[in-house]
Image (cartoon, rainbow, N blue to C red; front, side):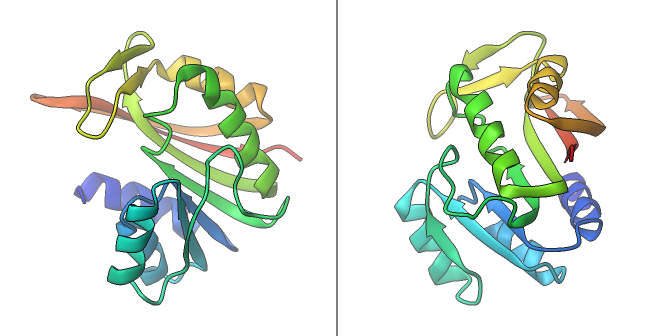
Length: 174
């Protein structure tokens, strides 16, 4: 876990007052980090093996299998959604539906922290697990606004030998 990611996620989580879902939690390390910060948190991932690993490593944290576009959460039940590099493998045509699902699950004023690989254009690239996508920050901002979010923060970072990263904090209108 990079120190800049720890700072970004921790700073965001401290401003969320209520339940958080780590959507696309993978092996659960960010879910556990959020719990350690005092958050009421659960993790969901579509890969059963990741959920099994997370549950074995962090037995006190609830994890479940689910899809990002059909989360096992009641409408308006969440105060926050962490989507930390969880939409990077989603085909570009499906990202709007995923953001719509995040909006469905959030209460009005609920917060989304979305981390992704930033690029000058929407472009596929080979990634360790599956094809991933670079997203232009302004295009992701447009999708969020179209889905009912107000963007309240954008952070980007680049460095030699690493892919450019972006994090967008958005609040659901309502």
